[in-house]
Structures are given as C-alpha cells and as structure tokens.
Image (cartoon, rainbow, N blue to C red; front, side, top):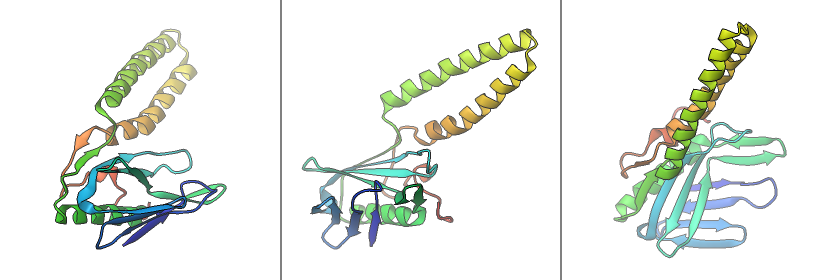
Length: 190
C-alpha cells in the first residue's frame, strides 16, 4: 500500500509505502524503512488550514529518535491544496493494523497535548466572558447592529474554533479503536 503527498508547492512529494519489512519512506532525498515494531509512537491530529478545512496529520516516531509527518492534503497548484481523505485514512488504518500484527508497543495518542489543550480551553473561556460582556453593553446601549454583529461573530468563531478544539481533545487510543474525529470520513473524499 502506497501514499504520497506534497507538503509544499516547491519540492518533491513525500512518499510512503507499507511493505513486508516495515514503513518505507522517501522525503526530500532521504529514505528509510522503519520496522513496524520499531515505531514508538503515533500521534493523530486535526490541523485545518485556510485553504483546506479537512486536513489531518499523523506524526510517527521511531525508537531511534526519527520523526515523520503524514498529511491528508497535497499541493497541486499555487492556489489548490487538494484533499486525499480516503487514501490517507486507508493508509493510516492499514499502518495501525500492521503495527498491531508486528506486536508493536507504540504509544498511540490523538489531539493536542494536555497543557496546550488546557490553555486553549482557558483562552476560549476568557474570550466567551469578554464577548458576553460586550454583548450586554451593546444591548444596554440599544446598539442592535453591534449586538447582531457580536452574535454572528461568536457563532462563526464557535463553529470554526470549537470544531478544532473538540476534535483535538487529548486522548489515548488502541490499535483497534482509531479516533474517527482525527481521521477523514470513510464515505467521502474530503
């Protein structure tokens, strides 16, 4: 099974293959094969960017200290970042299956780190209090347009940032229970 993506418009594609020997990779002129049992950790996360809202990332660590990243999107032109959702999902699921079959003891985690996640929640709580205060002031001053703007902005913010924070809740998972929130949907090519 093979997977490839371009991390930037300039440069070669990052290429990965699941072989009988392990995870084979080729990135920027470097290459290697990591045995499945030598993979010490996998971290899945949801990482949207302005040009691609459905972008996922897998950071894979090797017992010898190496790290590679696999993204679910690829650059095609100067203005187009294309999703590869089903290909990415299939590759990540099969990687986990092969690691489990090899008896891997890798640390499987998803989302943000606990400290970063706590800081993000604290910041969101502070912003919610500030926005509520502004909304109350706008309503007391009968500034209906300002109040409407604040409600609209808060709804958009909650939709965008809330989705990111909700999906990236810190978690541990098992080989047979990959977190759906941190993988593209099965049924569509997002």
